[in-house]
Length: 403
Image 1 (cartoon, one colour):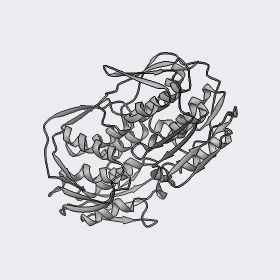
Image 2: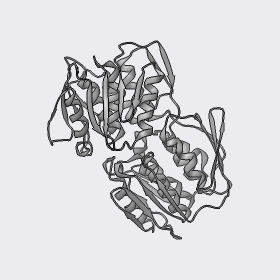
Image 3: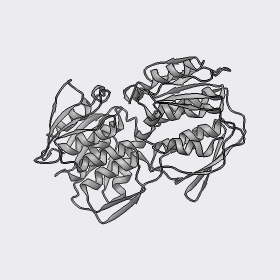
Image 4: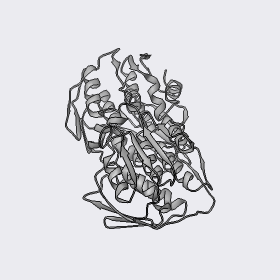
């Protein structure tokens, strides 16, 4: 296995980094572009996930392998269910075959879709026989992955009768649902969200539209971590908007607690270590921003403070069980960690073991979240190229600002 050895980083260079377009926005827009061919996308994500989805959407193959791309699996399941006279087998990596999809398949079947499990009940691979879905009402649990919900919302305007999507129970991943609805609105599709029902009417055409994708806030988190761990440091990231559609834009509020000031200037954010007092213990509910959990946990460990992060029930079904992975790797570095099914608690530690090899478990966020600890001493990252899933240029950008 390839191993990246990172020497101790002494300080952060004040340079400007152009972050790739948001993976979350891009993937939603790729589905919409396939449904409305006069939609143009600028500054799209160049992540593996987005490239896999883009390739699958234009493929004429009968079997499509999306590897580890979870968003692609969910969005394509809904998309191909609506493609009349097309039969597709959707498969993926071994890990993908153990990531549940039953909730989405049940909802699509309720709408009239024809989907079969080819191996294990409730999991990919799937055989999808596309057809016209004429039912317009479906119920889904509100506390499930937002990707299930977004998959249904994205196909809704092209269904003959649109869709009424009713949530059962509390809705948890609200920012990602709002992102999907905002993108629909941006291309001229109207929706109504009253109480626990989202209604989208059918719309067969849109006006010509170009959407510029904002840079990815999740990818910015690793630079927030670097600045938090480096006194007197400052860097600039482009291209970001203060009124972002991305839930992870809450980064600037979270890292304010960890001493990082965010200055919005035109389409750039300036991150400054404000050298302020930080709490000895940080408690956060990350129900709306679970993808930030790894970065925040590692930052707190690097700062020598305790943290308790909750709202993380979806992390157990990602590329790996992220809570178990975090516990294992932080403890290798000398930390003490407790986890439950939806939380992680990292205890303050004055010791960070040097030259530890961090396993990444085929998970891009594990590689990038631990890299900033090079400010505390040399560290090794296994399978460093895994970052291509969301941020292919990460190591180049990391090298650009570290010395």
